[in-house]
Length: 472
Ligand code: HEM
Image 1: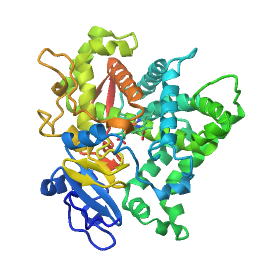
Image 2: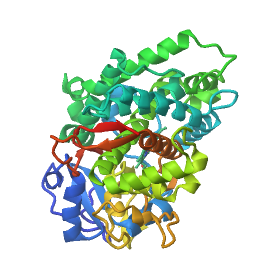
Image 3: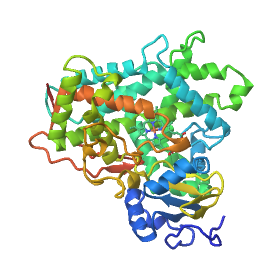
């Protein structure tokens, strides 16, 4: 739809023929481009990706109005034609990029309740996380205090939580197949973040050029192939009498026939939902933990205070549990500040208006892509005392008790709020406290001070850094 004649549409930069406003955006650092445009056009402005109308929402008030007050109006997702090459189609859209409607609702409800019910007669999710934290500490111990890059071990640990949940199995650290999976993952994220996928989604006809989809989505395709192998292996050992994990629960639903099929319980969707849980659930949590350790290197006094609280409440031997969280306001505040300042999903995931809606007095027509600039909320100068500093006191009141300001939205909000929020919180608390209970993290003598700016590829992760883990 041409937007030229719309009145009450948000302002924005001049659009060029064909490419629209795409040249204004650095797709490797979009949040920085948005911050510049915001200074000129205000908290709500429009862009145009070729023919796609995009509206960018900035600051706590505007983002909250869209996600919470106009939750259903803003609950749809843009359609990504490029994903058809990965099996995305009718009744199989996974969850993350599924369009708003009854299939998405069924899939989301099923996934949430299945994750929640895990533990019936088996180890609870919390016990699994605690067990994995133990494996992680043993692996760190074998580094014997030498400088090392935490990335691989932490990714491995976090990914194992999803693996046990989805496939009932974990990978040993150092497993070659697992290294391959992590590499595929990284490649597919990098692939998605650049200019080319934006262009292909905006101008899908380009996907018909022979070789283009294969070239543009090589990493993602390889990742899906890997998921297929895991599902096939799993099916070989499936016994309908037992539900071992998420895949079993999904296969059981698929047995229910036509009605279930209509609700998205089909083989193709199992692949996509599973891939979504991996994609949305591993790099996010492990990247947050890596920011956490990085901030401990930069702020040793904060690390010491966390360790003092751990020693007081849990001691050095017993494993941390979620029950400890209420008695540990400082540690809890530090973890929240890691999420706020680390700001790992700076521009959220794209939404789309499900119907015409009004935001901040502007009319946003149905079918407009919405970008929720979460970074501008987590660093909103009107809300946070020191938005651009690492300052755990943002989450403590005058009596040292934990408080959570409303603008704390790293998981977004509303109908599309992160489905894994509970699991992620549990992982962050258990992994972080277990690590600091067992080790003190220090910057190796010859190493430069780690950078705080991060690299963006859908999520913002720290530049590689080395650390020494000194056993306590
Ligand atoms: C969506 C953040 C961990 C599964 C999202 C969104 C954000 C987010 C910002 C977009 C919400 C929106 O569209 O407005 C995070 C952060 C995490 C994390 C910061 C860790 C620190 C997880 C985990 C899982 C998960 C552990 C899986 C078990 C999902 C799914 C969606 C989602 C399935 C799509 C929801 C939908 O479209 O209905 N997450 N996430 N996330 N997340 Fe997470």
